[in-house]
Amino acid sequence: MTINLTVDLVLLTIRGGELQVLLIRRGIPPYQGMWALPGGFVLDGEDLPEAAARELREETGLDPQAGHLEQLATYGTPGRDPRGRVVTVAYLALLPDLPAPVAGSDAAGAEWRRYDEVADGGLAFDHDRILRDGIERARSKLEYTPLATAFCPAEFTIADLRAVYETVWQTRIDARNFHRKVTGAEGFVEPTGGTVIRDRGRPAQLFRRGPAALLHPPLMRPAE
Amino acid sequence: MTINLTVDLVLLTIRGGELQVLLIRRGIPPYQGMWALPGGFVLDGEDLPEAAARELREETGLDPQAGHLEQLATYGTPGRDPRGRVVTVAYLALLPDLPAPVAGSDAAGAEWRRYDEVADGGLAFDHDRILRDGIERARSKLEYTPLATAFCPAEFTIADLRAVYETVWQTRIDARNFHRKVTGAEGFVEPTGGTVIRDRGRPAQLFRRGPAALLHPPLMRPAE
DNA sequence: AAAATAGTGTCTGTCAGACAATATGAC
DNA sequence: GTCATATTGTCTGACAGACACTATTTT
Image (cartoon, rainbow over all chains, first blue to last red):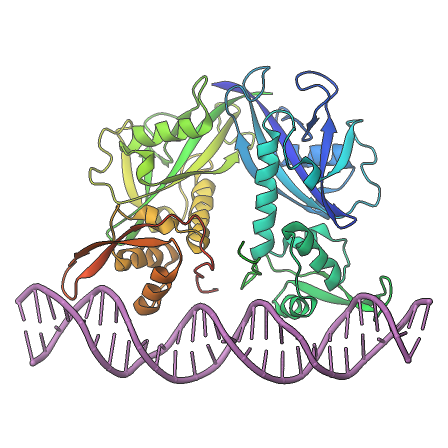
């Protein structure tokens, strides 16, 4: 059958030690005045990853290269959009804290919201479920891929990286064991040679992302 | 934009110690005479998992309950179907060896093919890529979920389960360590009390699937 | 000096792989 | 008995978590 196809984005970043998600305040019905994931229709002749990258640029002014963008899942339950049959391909992006937050944004009402404030529901359409699926994907991807670096700028310290895990997993991690594990994992991070002093204390070495696509063995989040 | 939406199925099973995939010989253009994944259009008012379950029943006569069915990914590159803009939502199914293989099949040309014979390419549309993605998903899912049991009938021995891993991962596994790990993993398998003699040797205990949805810790396939 | 953060060394329990030994059937 | 497979037990090396300790800065 013929349907209308959209892409919706779960854009995650970490700002001020909090996991945040980019949401749009809807200006028109349906769900007027409610928060929703950014997204839009797939254009004629446009591939799905292209459409997601275009939306990402429009909403954040950010180059998709800077972070990580992957397909999440597709949602097409009849009635999920009251205007008709709309199927949406959701994408998940993990982004570093933006230097110019939401500059040049398409949608005027775009805002970074703390995840814990919107996790309880209240989003438009079926976006609560999509957001929940995106968070769970992000949490498990941190275990067996080096994607935590996507939340960090090009150069970062091990403490920065640890803060990403602690924020996304909502756990405390022993800094010393973490340091040993991360620097010992083949291809996870590479030293740049530089150092930086964040607040007080001994200067920390700077690292950049390594070439590995998978972590062997994975970092394990504690079983709940 | 308006597009045509289909579901395609990567149906995997293990028969005779070989990983096999259900393929359809195409009777009409495009790609006439070539092998393709089974699939079809999503019907009006039909949810995506419904459409996948319906196709599964039509192609195999099998109840989706018997195995495992999950969404794989969505493919929508313009030009992937020469007839127009067609976006397909691919589903992955892991199925036990069927008692009545492909009985009541919709498509006359449906056949179980050995994966290693079709892995090199030659499928219609972009189905080579979809199949590859499905295999990779299956391989990694065996690591951190108990889904290997989806390849087994309702009651199975630990040796049966080990054969699943050895077939899907193309490795040899020590039977004794595997036995200890599987029977020790919380909620992976439950003894039925029965025993069975497969060929020769000491009778093996029978097990059924346990309630666990995730394995903590995961079984690890050896790093290549 | 004290405080704070970065990074290293060491200990200990657990677990994975190797493989010996035992159990129970068919022949 | 021998053979084949299932299952248990034991050993050993590697690794995870706990945490003492050292290093380098600010105040």
